Length: 508
Image 1 (tube, rainbow, N blue to C red):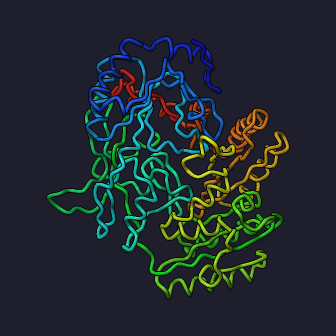
Image 2: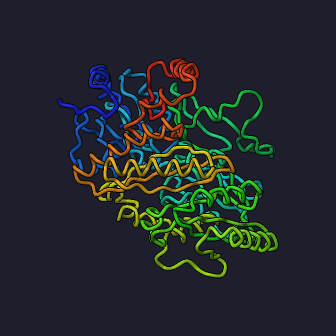
Image 3: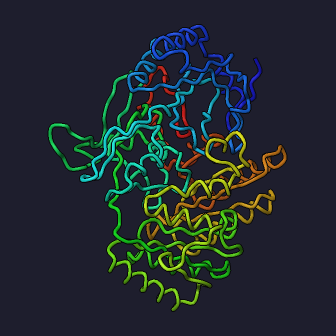
């Protein structure tokens, strides 16, 4: 059997993983899994070879790793049984866990290493409970943001949605520390249900109590275990308590265009608005490349500023911001969503304005603009798409420097990246750098080179990525501020998962 090894993973390391596989034990384990949940919920592959390679393509064109099987449990009991079986048979094959597998731009459903069995939790798709009065929902990993948003329609609560497809997992994105339109999704996590590598089920953080009503307190008493299972391979999350936001009585989104030569001053002004609590949710700034990619006005940067709350508050602050924008003379145009609807072909504005209100129903338009396909066909047929996600200080000089680095990448590779500023607060920006490319061998190689260069240039500049793709998991050790802390995580992993039942992930 011939294997191609991963970028960033040495040949010796890859072969070491594969040579340790106990194929007899693996076959026995899969046979027992089939007895528990039925052969129909299990796809076996001949020592990792796929009969339909097309189905394994991912939109970023990262190399498809060698996977021995895909298991699709339908219940919590199934997950517990699978973990118990793999722990008993000592296969030396780890379980690679995905929710819906739509982690586009970072590897989709691909593991970081060869020689794994994928545990696909998409069929765990139950909304177990919702309490709008208290502001929480208990959901499983297969629940999509469209599904949960629909359940909340007409209530006084809403979901903190992202601008990605409505068919993406709420839990999966929160566990990978994604960013919604209102805040980081880690802030939405109140509690987690976790199957540990020894098959024990635990609940960390806050969980609804059937016998008494308690206040939501994710941190609990004593050391908090909740963050331990984000970006983690220490357990398998089978459900989460998601905090729901109060639906605002009124909302207005200001659209402000400005040119590249006023970028630093415009960023400074926008930061001032955030610092003075004039902005609701995450302020977004799309550069000229991203704006045009999603159907917006070409040649201009676009800032989207949400104001929400009571009618009086929205009216007062919106007018204040308009006055501020006119006074600084930095913006070429200022329009407001409550008086001027977005253009029919301006999908970025439509998506963001609806998403601020907890509605992902327009998101598919922007997805199709990006890759030319709907959610079910992004990986199999979409145009090339890669994400690089660094954190950048929220000031004009830092953002301008980041855009200069993107320009250098274009000069070196010919790949022109788009960027979106997500202002998480007055000091911090989540910068989404997206590389779009025609997925042929030459362009794919150039796009992957552009990603490699991005890691080098941005990290050297102090702009550290907070989410990694499958080909750059080996950067984890370079990015942690203290190697001793990373070693502590490894010690915890060895303590609770000595047989490596759960596979290494992008952050292991």
